[in-house]
Image (cartoon, rainbow, N blue to C red; front, top):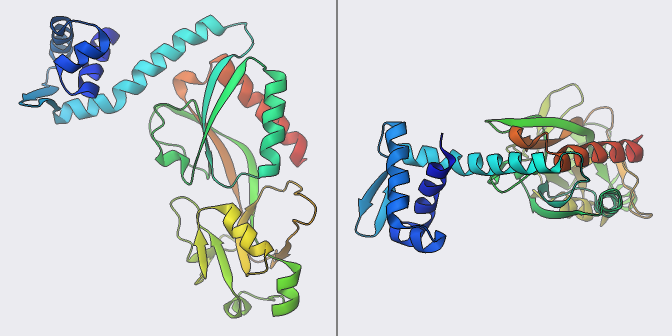
Length: 294
């Protein structure tokens, strides 16, 4: 595929007309139109249809536009990676992270990355479900779970976390400690809802599930944890097995009955996986996490 033709097509799609695309890019409408027509000839189908407002995508055009921007960015990243070979990682690394990562871990991790790679800048956005976000403008997605997005992605587990039931000492002293799953019916229940999952069923250590009716369901792990620390109930939340701040301790409830492990994964576009700043930072993060979880 000719990248100039693809870029011309994407410019017209983004601006909504050949006239607006010409003004935005500084290219002539004749050049843009010639490149788009050449791309349509290669595809063998119409990609755009004209109307009074400008242009609209055909079904084939929508399919190409959906993947085309990622292809252009991947090509640009590959060229950049060649320039970066043998150099210290630099420039901007764009990440999307799940809400709920341990806050007392993030600052030391950032400091460690900055110390190792002072020429590298990080742009971080947070999401309840990172894989539901558009990954076109992202270099690295960190997310909970075993799955990777469909398409040309490389996904690897960087650590495993324990999902457990817990409560504050004050709550258990006031309400009693559950000795069985049936006992949970007499308690205030708080639940983190993992992306794509139903919080009305909690996991057992043997791989099963049992029904619950939580008083609080939230996608934000911190909210559930803080409510639990405040003595408001028994909570199902992930635990990164990393020591928290003093006074932030919770008691594990039914540890041999309720809970499971889940992966924290890093997903990157396959075309970007060998770029030095991506590859070296991922290696650094895995080494850092081994040091704090061992």
